[in-house]
Image (cartoon, rainbow, N blue to C red; front, top):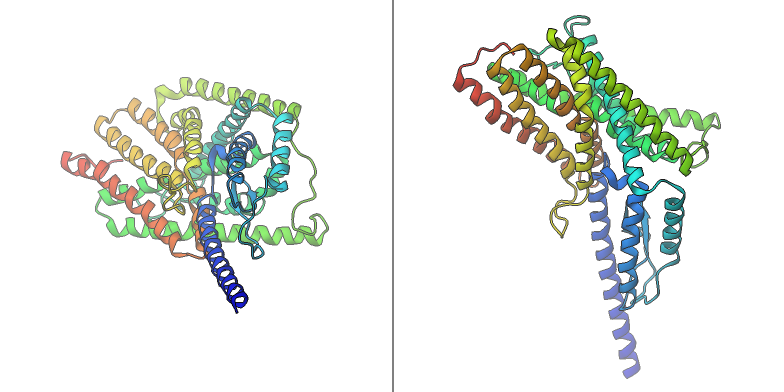
Length: 450
């Protein structure tokens, strides 16, 4: 009887342990999903191989210390952070073992990659140079789309309508984000992680701009067109969301076509085996990026000098090309806050605070610069401020990353987070814009000619 009692007690303890493990496992899955949707668009310098190795190595040391004292669970590395394994473990009260073989293999592989690639400081320089080059290309593309759809050519967009000047670039950038930031990002990363960062964060992040969108709606509001500004946000948001969905689905269809043509492997990844992973290839890529960046900055500086005295959008464009990379770099560094949450506990991990800070701060500075331009009202001031707005603020804020995060939240177990995050970004930016731009505009009695 006593033996039966001990068995029954053991079963109860085992059941309690299993239920506790399942509950803890569910919480971990929800926490992991919250972090992953927040990191869907960008994670900044945490995406660099050397940075990941440093973080995983530091974690391994603490993991060794914990394994001396008690139970630990098997961990896997998912891209840029270590997460609990999603598979259900067998019933086990306590596992006292040294560092797992998987963790050792991960560390050995990371050490090998670190040895073959560039040192961390050169890795940073290489990535920042590529970000700057692709950021300038994004600025140039945004300018061309503005001119193409603006009053001078297609006459579709305007400062005085809900179809604001940056709408075409935001739509195109969101569509391309579905291709190169969602479906084919892994394939590009297989060839070069820096190239994947440069295309998504550098080019698409600079091609799209949230601050220009917000400022366009403020321009309508300051004239009393509150309904137009509300519709501008609603229509603009709907179009970029539809664009990334269409981009993602069309990219999946293209991948399926490649698979049917035997150009992809069975698991859906490309058969491209070329990889920029050696020291020589990475150093060559870094030097090429620096040379191209020097040329782009040199040409932009010469054109600014030639066209500054005449003012206009051409001079503003070349100023934007000079200052644009700084906006890209700031946004890239802020993106490392995505998926981290608030405080040591990591509260609200599902909110991409890096992207949120970049978009809101850029929108506020954009509104302040618009107020300065209106108050000073000289040609030189308009040229300089317009260039900073179009380049620095346009590249600091982004719609492509913003909508990629929204799309990931929409497809998660908590789709309401997508709309809460969108409303938070838009409402905070617009409200602060009213305080910074509209109220001084009304109280000072400026002429509505901007």
